[in-house]
Length: 57
Image: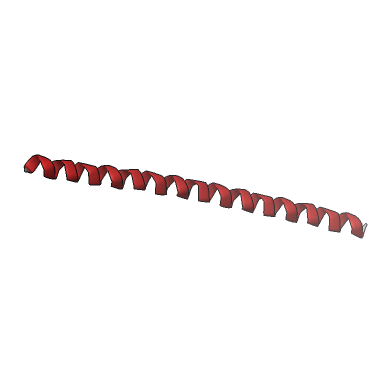
């Protein structure tokens, strides 16, 4: 009987750890995506400022 309880708790623990790992991967994936978007936005803004400066000359 005790074996069943230990096995159930082990399965529950493994499932919980897998869910946590999946959530962490998703969170990091979204953070990477946001960083990449910000990088492109900063680059576009910099190019716009440079081209605007050349037009003023």
